[in-house]
Image 1 (cartoon, rainbow, N blue to C red):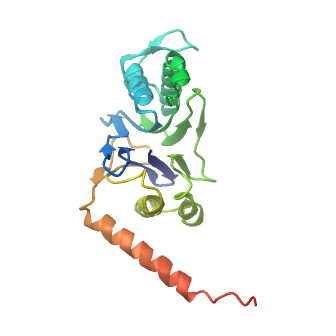
Image 2: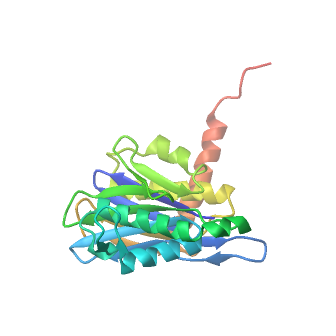
Amino acid sequence: MTYCVGVLVKDGLAMLADTRTNAGVDNVSTYRKLRIFGNDGRRLIAVASAGSLSTTQTAMERARLGITAPDTKQVEMLEEATSIHRAAYLLGQAIRFTRDEMEGLKQEEVNIDATLLVGGSVGGEPTRLFLVYGAGNFIECCSDTPYLQIGETKYGRPILDRALTYDTELDEAVKIALISFSSTMRSDLAVGLPIDVVTMRSGACTAELVHRIDDQDEYYRDLDERWSEALRAAQASIPRPPYR
């Protein structure tokens, strides 16, 4: 029950995540799913999570405190990662170790799956964005498709495919991502406000924006209504089919 998106454009990176963890007529709860590490001028690691809350919480704490990396046999901590690629690797291993420990819960029909978006820059390296799977493997975002999604992805994808390119300005990319959230929340009650947002310029190790959008946010309310009106106007302007 979540939706997270990361967009990597020429100007930089934006990551957005909703906060809903449970949804029902009389039971709605929220939890922050976008976490920031560093943000001190030397490293900025942003992590968005989807899936089992217990898996992601345990894995994140394990990576923060330090895990024995399978490839080096050394204890490494997330906040000392030498690159974003290494941060994605450590978080992938932390999720895999955690899922292995929880394997017995599958017999109780407990969902232990989790995925992460990991982005940022360490030491001024080019800003990068990765999608980390529950098995520990991961893929990297590229300029051909400058976004990655996790969670409830299908409703928000069309606007990203149609409007977002690698040359899109960062502020415009944030707007497109918020429209993606608007479309998702319109069709899926499992995704909801507040939305956490972080942006960073390419190669920067400090965030340009860290912001939470709630149901009183005037810009988001205006965007949501304008998008609905624009869709209705576009639909009305298209001629009816000539088929008889």
